[in-house]
Image 1 (tube, rainbow, N blue to C red):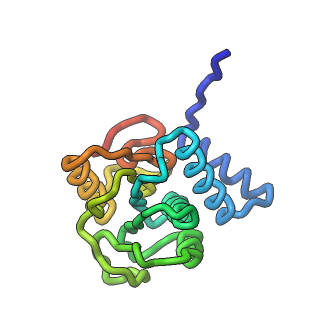
Image 2: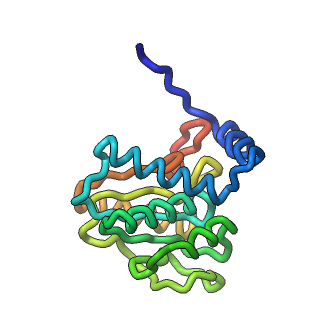
Length: 187
């Protein structure tokens, strides 16, 4: 028997999140569950193996928070990984709370520059050389319009890296640059 696939719209996904939060699961815990579930699924389906080196691209919102959980879990499981966060003047509260839980910020970098960015990390202009798997946690189901600023810069870095070598790219929620409701490609 084949199971029917269901792809929720952006508003349906937001309703699911709000219902879960209303039932007593905090947004912070929802991020923890999402990040761990994505990583477990990638390992179970062999999209990711012990020999892979990973890079997590994170936006400033809750999709980026999911990426922080993935990074933390990869470190806990002894994977080689780096974290690239878009520079922004504002990050969601849950993102900042997740950032504080990271056991190490040694492999964390900013993409782009913003004089009002509260994160004190070195800036990078490229994805590290050994990376074989990239997690796209830049923008989630709430993205509207074409990526811009530091998010666009991160996508440009990813495109340049993919031109050099084949990689696996795993999008959390929806690939950055695609409207979750219409499928319109912005990039």
